[in-house]
Length: 212
Image (cartoon, rainbow, N blue to C red; front, side):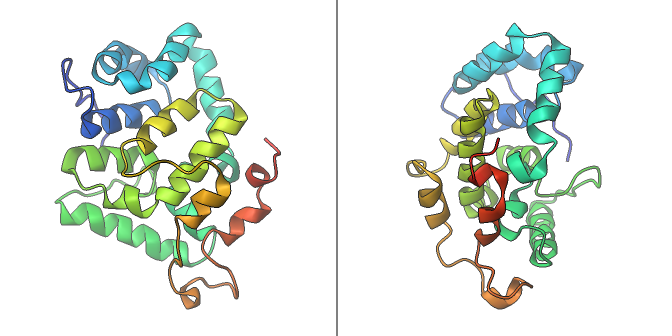
């Protein structure tokens, strides 16, 4: 899959597909192509204006440095959705296979440049196909990422808030509510570590202890 400019000026502002495609671009490394598309994204996705205002207010190299600073530490602001559910257990490999299977069901093949659970790729897939099942399945992880970014004060929190806003129901107010979205989760025997419940690994992370 190749994240590209599938946004058109004049697209309906409330169209989730348009917003998700624009959010996919915002959550990839801000290269020259990203900056060229900012006016297009601004016209197509008003919900992203807060982030785009910031992107246009700083030098491109500063935005790139900030992106690396925010997302280069996977255990703090991880953009790989299955990690939030599975951590680094063997169950994560099974989850990645399911992501690829979902893409293939729609006739899409995922390149090996990134893992298939990379959030920008999932957003692009959802925008192209209208199938938001992967986003809904990993809603708790999305919400935990949103909360973590908001607590860190990064403008990227606005992008996650907009993405979560395309999903049904209100967003959780705090981490406890976000974890509760997971429900009972997958069977414990699939975890690979005795006694590890869904999202249980997150209690050990800096993002959940106030260390940003």
